[in-house]
Amino acid sequence: TITAPTIALTSTLNNVTLVGNYSATGSITLTANAGAVSSTGALTTPTLIASAGNGGIAITSTSAQTLTANSTGDTSVKDTAASVAIASGSAGAAKTFTIQTTNGNVTQTGGITGGALTVNLGNAANTATLLNAGNNVGTLNGAGAPGSINYSNNANALNLGTFIAGQNLTATASTIATTANNAGLGNVVLTANAVGGNAINISKTLGAATINLSTPSANMIESGTGAINAGTSLTVNLAGGGTADFSANANNVALLNGTGSGTIKVNNGANALQL
Image 1: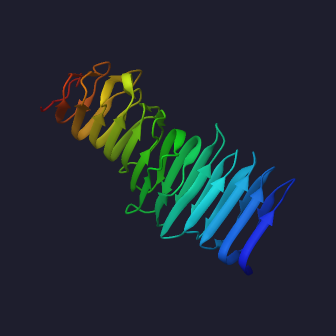
Image 2 (image 1 turned 90 degrees about the horizontal axis):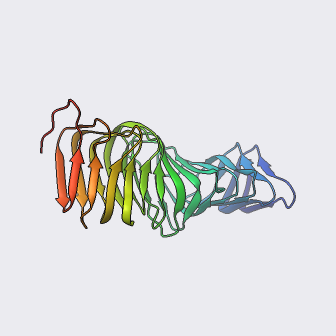
Image 3 (image 1 turned 45 degrees about the vertical axis):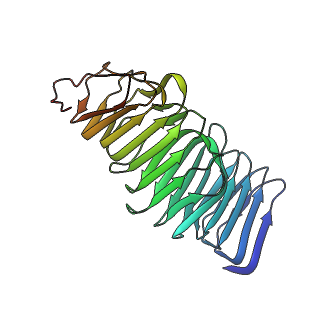
């Protein structure tokens, strides 16, 4: 174990690779802008700053309460703190930024960018509140325990990937599409703020206890093999009018609610439907 008030390690040509435990009462800074940053030991510090190139970042254990992790490769950090605030996070345009907690909540003070964002929660009571104005990822995924994820992609399009059964999801973006089948989620709230067109596209099955879909100024559709399975209720909010057409495939909605105006079409197959 190496202990110091502040630890800063920089590689200008290759990688920063740590295999032991490092402890700093102030901060740990790891920089390898031409390579990769990795650590298989424990990084004990209140503040962790990591920067890497295409080799990416892989931190298997840190107690940092404030995290900065930016690379043009895959970026992955496992954090043991009770609460971690992401000051800045990035991965390459076709890579994934992963934040994993063992039993802590995730917030942010700076944006997260990359091809995908995976939020891996360690406990069902954990929450990830990621609403920064700088967020811009292509796909959002949830992993680990069935906690709660609240994410905003701002004025950018968002694909929904895979999530854990029981996970609660709230997501806001310009447009939202389901790109993976999900079953048994908790409460799902999706808001797509694009003006005109099809702002919400259910192209893969979305299954949850309650589903709330909202488009202030656009339409919603069901396409491909997409279907909606809402064990408790589906609420469709067409605040500015428009059409929500969920008739392409057989859905399984226990109770349908509608707010706003416009037109709602639902094919519930051979399943009973309450209005």
